Image (cartoon, rainbow, N blue to C red; front, side, top):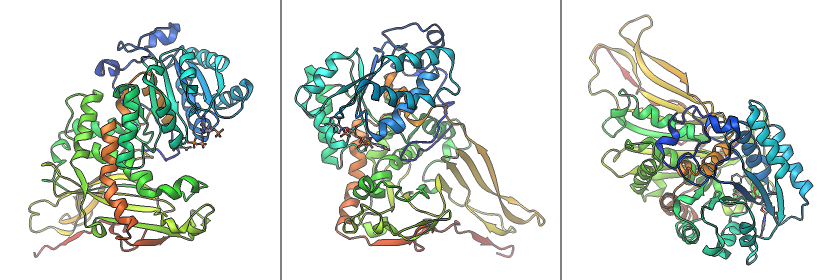
Length: 522
Ligand code: NDP
């Protein structure tokens, strides 16, 4: 059920992990009950007592995110009968008529009927028939306010707009323009620095309370979150071992074989550190490192995530604690890839990295001294999307064993979602010779598309998977000194051939963990 999502969010995500009692665990979660689904009963309140979201207002209705990810995610959610009585309103600066918008919705919803139930299909048709489009410049004084006042509330306002436009749109809104119960949904990137994220938080908090703000991280599916928590906290074999007493290092990889894929306009200004590590991988790190929350309530969970991130930093000798590189021409899966700098729309002077690695220190009693190595890049020969926990060697290996003693490793793979435990066993053949065995199983995944999960949280007023304001700021605080050091060229920009495993000098580019040869005579 666990999963990492590609940045474009198009991996499917099941949802077995959601606790059966989800409504009860979080008093605010307002799941549509099976009974409501089958009867189509409409209610103004969620099961948790929160006002149910009646309208999803998508700003940027003609954009890429809306067409490719949001509408299909929404369609699947509705088709499964997980929401009811919802109005869908699209808005944008394009002069579209109602038919053009409806075509877009129909096209996206057309692929969502697989696995649908009757109530869901009815609901899907209703949404398709009643959806509306409004042409509006959201940055114009009073324009968004007027639109907000005209839709059925409470509404969730999805800012599927260029980040600067979203910010401007929020700045022109006045608190009195925002009806009670409105949710504001912000896409990534959330700000571009600690200062800008804090300022955006200030703007949003002027309009609605924190728990009505959803900062989307579609990468972090519910299944991913609960898989990690389940493994760590439901197993006596693992729970006590996650600490500096037993763990040597934790690595979190997100190596993609995809290259630029026409995304120069966005990526060349972002780079691997901002695009993946600043947001997604730090969140995963926090889940791997947090203390057990008392409950799975969003407050408990996000408090613990925040606590880990507040304790985290990158050691200031950045030439040692960070690495960056850019791909040159090569071949990935039989496809020829040009030099990154030769791709259309790239400005070589920006020195954008396509592979980044940072070593984060978590300065608390559980983790001090254990490096958390976060790495992500593009155009790599091997897709590697996993968290690897490498345990320390045993205090004493009985004399007499032979072969190689390799560290015990636990690997949580993301897409495909797997769990691997690498351990030493005896034999085969000579019973005194240590050998390596891998125990492997699949983890479960959710049955919604990534953006279906995101919207599910928003429409049920569950901020569990949304990035809380203080956490968004802390993620910038952690990486900002690194970004500055890179801008000042304190860390060399290395190169690697597309299709390789990264610069040869990087330990994370090598395949195997060093093993210790043991000797019967020792
Ligand atoms: P696009 O550029 O494709 O779409 C932006 C939309 O905003 C367009 O419909 C545009 O209309 C509209 N718009 C721009 N200015 C205004 C305005 N003043 N008033 C009303 N509408 C306006 O961007 P994306 O869809 O790719 O991205 C949207 C957001 O989602 C960004 O924050 C991005 O970072 C984030 N995101 C995108 C992903 C993706 O895969 N696309 C993945 C993850 C996050 P018009 O064309 O008429 O200007």
